[in-house]
Image (tube, rainbow, N blue to C red; front, side, top):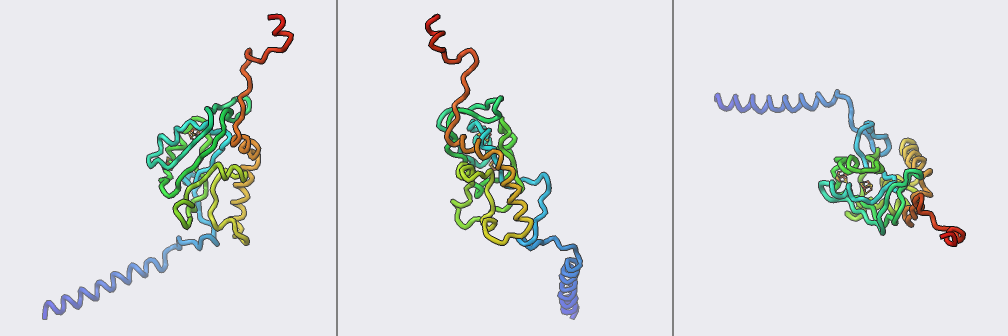
Length: 208
Ligand code: SF4
Ligand code: SF4
């Protein structure tokens, strides 16, 4: 009899404890948002998908070396260096810059290692993709379209919520002034001749 009563009490108290937890969350502040209809709250220092100032990338590979999961791939045709006067990198063409977001930890170590500070963590956290290969951010292809950062798949569709429209416009506005320089980077930019090594004129050659 004693055991029977104990089991009844145990079952009853378990139900009460469970209902207590449910009741607590019934009256708690709602933290779920109906994304993407409602804008997610992104803190200023959150680390989202990168944005890259491709025209200032010297393809040094520092980001690829420091990345703990080896998810960055960079290729160029010839060495590149920053031209301080132009504030862009000159030299060979940047032929590949990819980040595999299927692996990326959003640790920002690549950003810290970049000697030209051209790589940044962005405010886009949406990694949605249907196939593994679609999770690879191809920054060279993006630059051809005048963009600096991958966008969520759904954001290219019509009738966007207002917050998404505004964010997309902000990304486009940030990239727009760099469009020409980005395209030149894909072709390669000849470095300006060094002072004192200017090509000799015919008159100068005769003097010599
Ligand atoms: S954020 Fe971290 S994991 Fe992602 S690419 Fe940069 S170094 Fe690699
Ligand atoms: S560390 Fe910076 S400059 Fe070097 S390859 Fe990476 S993004 Fe480009």
